[in-house]
Length: 217
Ligand code: ADP
Ligand code: ADP
Ligand code: ZN
Image 1: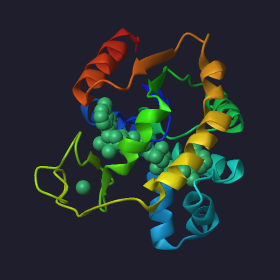
Image 2: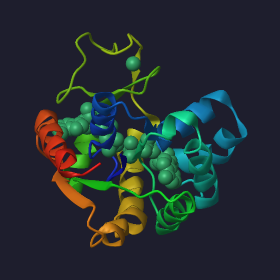
Image 3: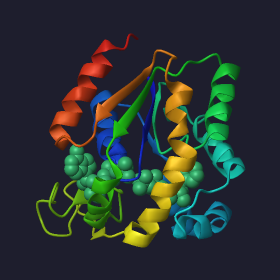
């Protein structure tokens, strides 16, 4: 199973990708998580990416395509994968198609998690993320069992600097300009599915299970 999660920042891609990954034994490849780790480690990738991330913009396509090219060659990605946060531009989508064509693989599913902008600011304003494993929580919608402690790994939770309202506004503009056109790119191929991301997490999870059950292979 090779699938992509599309959707605005804060739509719940990471929340759902993590659940599907665990249930189906697939790697969750979250480009934002990979980039944040690179920034923390001070690698060349991190140095290239940091200013774009801080401003709520996109890291250049060439950098992202190189990153995904490498990641998809790793052993754990041979049985399939869940891309969470990639592609975010037409150039990235075309590059992914080219990578897959070269190894004669198909994209099985494109899930578009739909949430209106009005709800996004509250989602991201209340988001708390694990420093260790990047599991996302929400102060009201999905609180951890213990305040500021990750249920999964016991790591400390923090709020991302780019989740403050003015950066969120930039990220939403970037989403509507660069990423939402990918809906058109994937629609009509037969593997595009939209889900209502405003429903509770468990309801979205069930909707996804039904979609996954309908995808052959
Ligand atoms: P969110 O979970 O809120 O959608 P991510 O964690 O996926 O945000 O991404 C955080 C930041 O990392 C983005 O704002 C962007 O700067 C950068 N980034 C992540 N994925 C990509 C990508 N595919 N192309 C360009 N930039 C990316
Ligand atoms: P994305 O990866 O698309 O940026 P996240 O999965 O990190 O989004 O979710 C953004 C925030 O919204 C988090 O605080 C998360 O706990 C919360 N959230 C995720 N899904 C839902 C949902 N269906 N209903 C309410 N809140 C949600
Ligand atoms: Zn954790």
